Image (cartoon, rainbow over all chains, first blue to last red; front, side):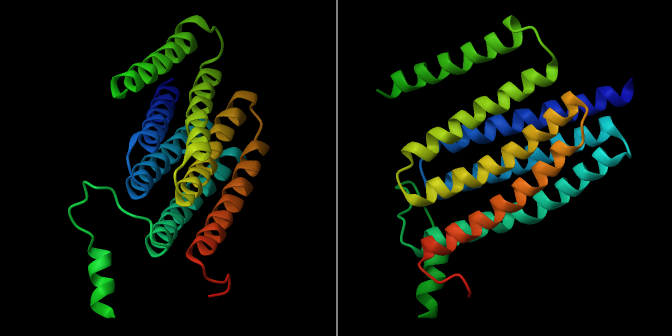
Length: 112
Length: 112
């Protein structure tokens, strides 16, 4: 009973974070803002959802597969986000007008 | 125009949430899967109207992580563990596709 309650709480938190992250993907004005909001919120949301499924299932085959999924998401999603952000900045996509600092550009100018 | 967009978005989200949680009578897992599929609709909107190519790459990356969470809930509903195998393979292919798209956007070859 208490295990079902904790698992459903984790699943509800995960679905809420998924929805808010996708709302940020639609609403924010820039590629980098969208990438930051969507990647953080959706990674944490899906990992919380999978952890809730693990609490509901326990130590059977489904539970271990879900644990492997959590580790895989936490390893690959930040790497993909970093590679996409670096590629977007190097291919010359402009930042939005409200930006106050761009330290990657300053560092790049210093090196040349 | 700005107020019109706010009103359209709030009416759409409110109507969906009311119809999903108060009118539709089904399992709680199916209701949560409906919320994730509604989020996927927003992601597809960003894929279609994204101003630059990086927006579309970000949206495809986010869609892969969302689908992994949805497949975990679907396996919990049907009480089958092979849905999580599909989720793991989907996450792996989505990660490789994001890396390849980022390399193509950056304008470099695939082996450096």
